[in-house]
Image 1 (cartoon, rainbow over the protein chains, first blue to last red):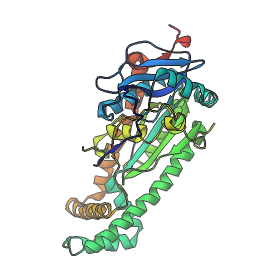
Image 2 (cartoon, rainbow over the protein chains, first blue to last red):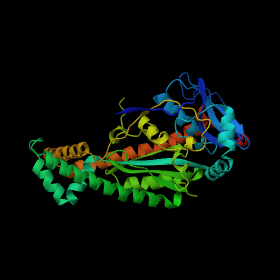
Image 3 (cartoon, rainbow over the protein chains, first blue to last red):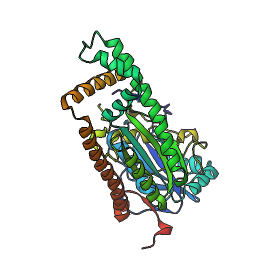
Image 4 (cartoon, chains in turn blue, orange):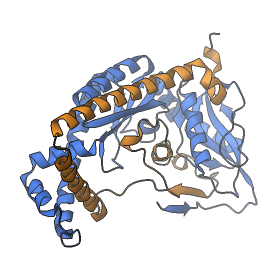
Amino acid sequence: MSASTKEKSRPDTGQRTGVYVYGIVPGDVELNSVVHGVGNPPGEIRLVRSGDLAALVSQVDITKPLGTPEDLHAHEEILDATVIDAPVLPSRFGAVLTSDEAVANELLDANHDEFAAALQQLEGRVEYIVRGRYTEQAVLEEILSGNSRAARLADRIRGADPDATRELRIQLGEIVNNTVADKRQADTRLLVSAMKDHCAASVVRTATNELDAVYAAFLIEDDRVGELERVVTDLSDRWQGRVELTVRGPMAPYDFVGNPTEAGG
Amino acid sequence: MTIMQSGGSRGPSPSGLADVIETILDKGLVIDAYVRVSLVGIEVLTIDARVVIASVDTYLRFAEAVNRLDISQEKQGLPGLVGEMQESGARHKTKGMLDGATDKLKDFANGERERQGARRGGREVN
């Protein structure tokens, strides 16, 4: 896999540390223990408060790059642990400001009304991600039995020299890929519609694996998680042997901030 | 750096690195959009964990999987029975996954959160 480096414009102030922002929470949140965040050595998590808002932050050395697996896990774990108790607007990984004052004034005060309204809307709600992968053998059998052209191509490549049948293989693979994409769309529609009455909002995530069957985020009242489990269990029964479903959560509402058109009510 | 996708055969993977990356690098509040003056540039090493779908490699891989499928069916000769066994296997896996999610929820409720996160002081009951 590729690794890339991205650098934002760095003001030439000689500053060596910055304030890393994990997310925004209501002002009555308290830290109840020492928690370590991103960076090496990891900074201790603090709260920068301003009025009825606060930001979860830690000090980071800005001369060292961020993005180790430990950094990524720390960012997410802090936010996912926080959302159990209080609503949180999670930041995208990598946001660093110059000082606590900048966090209080430029971030919290300057955008107070928008953040306060978003936190109010997220009160008592958490995110869950439902992801399903097609069982390869089952979905391929399904495709071959439903598509005579694919079945004919499969017959022609069976046992044949792979190099001599490369074009046929590409044709077959393309049919399979496109059919999986169609099935993914239909199955995702089924999941989202089954969840419709059990969640406050939903976002379909872009598939990132060729065997992804469903991949969607749901914003759920934390006392209605049982309904999600029932829906997922029903679908698991219905898709037995065909789709393997996994549920992740509760998580901070990563998919329900930042873009007002995505966050439903 | 190699990132393993949490593949179907590996079972539940509640917070694999690939899942974390897809969540916190792509989603969440873009602080840059709210703060302009006091942003600090910091080098962020990002890892692209995404499998490129709809490429020729994907097509060839699918074709090879179809090829293997035919061979395995011929050898086993009992596709009905095999299918049935796989179905029940998958069912157990799914149930285990759901239990896992519930366990995680309970772990958090039983104090995991006190170690890791922030909690709301004004609302503590104990």
